[in-house]
Image 1: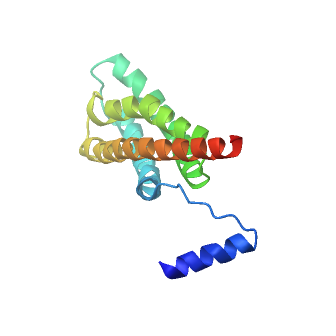
Image 2: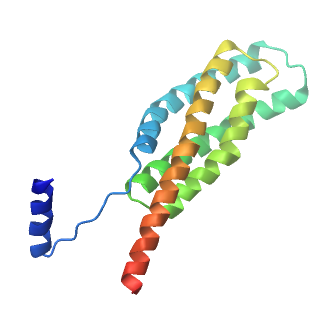
Length: 164
């Protein structure tokens, strides 16, 4: 529009740089809504696991042995993963978004699949809550990949503009 062109020319005259924002809004919205849900899921799943360990008999000792480390691994990795996603997207940093994607694919997705579908003792919350977090994670991987492509394209074009 005419107003935005006038504002852009005024900024150029003052020596201010005009830079396009490359943050991916759908990716940021998914991260924003996933963060509180993940906290609630982690708390309820921890209570659920404690209840299972105290009151239920496991079919195999392997199932009983795996449930706590998988939950701890998922909880720690989820916090780091969401931090890298938000920080990388808002600051437009390729390494953080790449770390987010790697942490989403491993260890998050295997841990979620185990917690939601393959535990010895499955409760309704395990399946429902795990499925919701799984869908969030898959959608975040798709949007995160798009955000990463956009960031790489932008930084590559900036590099070639400076190098020329």
